[in-house]
Image (cartoon, rainbow, N blue to C red; front, side, top):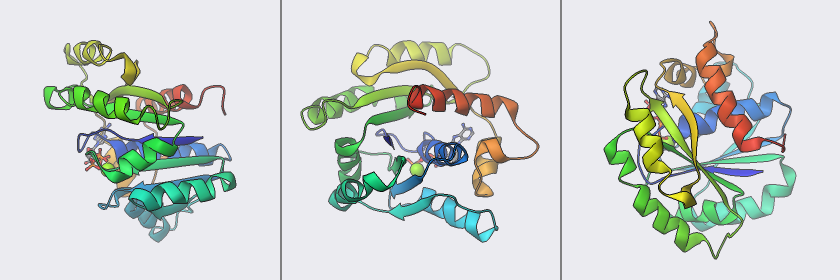
Length: 214
Ligand SMILES: Nc1ncnc2c1ncn2[C@@H]1O[C@H](COP(=O)(O)OP(=O)(O)OP(=O)(O)O)[C@@H](O)[C@H]1O
Ligand SMILES: [Mg+2]
């Protein structure tokens, strides 16, 4: 399955999600290709860091952008069980290219107005891309969610006002173990001591995306 982690807001946690899904899929024995479609190369750096620290990468990581990204996916998709594409936090050729060739677009939103303000723009992009990839499944969810207060719930309600964007009740909390794992080139399911809550949240997201397809 080809999954693109996208959206048109920076810093939401796309690369954190892409790297964590890569670890989970690989741990399940899947042959995974991680495509970094962002010139910041946060996902590629993470794989390199993992290698440098002596932790084996069971997946292939490559940096591709725009049309080249699309062609690369088309040419290589038969070789992998899973392709995970990380994109930049803006409307870009790479995001459009990835949307054109993916099965699923997942979009993290922080429970904050500037993030939710991009919903209408994302909806327009999805509308525009629909004739190119009418089968695309879209899942939106919260990241860096609060531990208390009403913002999470309110944000989910707002996201669900955009039915094309596939709002879910899934939520990844704001947890230090995500950046900690990233720094070590790990996924949050691999860190010690184990962060049970973070593991549960990322596994719930994983299961929702890949359900009946694992
Ligand atoms: N669930 C989380 N809990 C705590 N910190 C997080 C979480 N997710 C991401 N972060 C932190 O937020 C910052 C942005 O995360 P990340 O780089 O994954 O976002 P991004 O959407 O890929 O950004 P960009 O749009 O620049 O590519 C990083 O410092 C990351 O460690
Ligand atoms: Mg990123």
